Length: 111
Length: 115
Image (cartoon, rainbow over all chains, first blue to last red):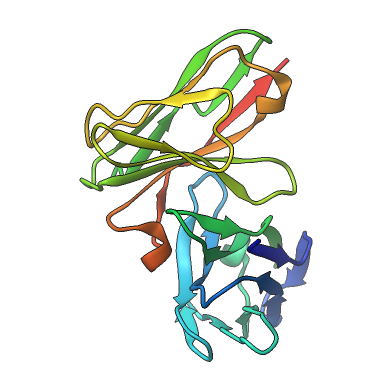
């Protein structure tokens, strides 16, 4: 069945460092891919998405490219800030109203 | 700016007790969902609703019930609580089918512990 695997956290970086959070998936067909973010004390919110192979989603300085050949959708940001500290979830579109979720990766940015 | 509101945020239950997690949205969304998140795991869909009066089971419905009498409200009922239901519960809504856009609007979550 469909599944999503994310790198385990926490990921701890210094401010202005380069960020990569790995996400790989297994799926039949051509799912859409998503990154959600959960800031402390808040609900999850959609960060970016890509709906077909080679699409690049971007928002708030974050980017992720839909790589069908490597079944990956890694999240990147060139220079992280303390305010980026959050839990990041990778997900793909399943069937029957479902999204298939990764376990989440906690990101800690130190000043 | 209410969006999706869940109550309570925290609750401790004894085995065998029952309770209802409340969820209300003010965005007039037709689609609503209940997810649970266990430590180190992704979110799992418990129940969903495509409109008032219509509900259906998700991936992990056992031990739960839902109702959708209005567009705004989608309460989740736990009957005979068990330790396996210790989890964080998220309510979400969307204006369209989730798998098409992926755009879900989430509440802040309810942390439930069953002892």
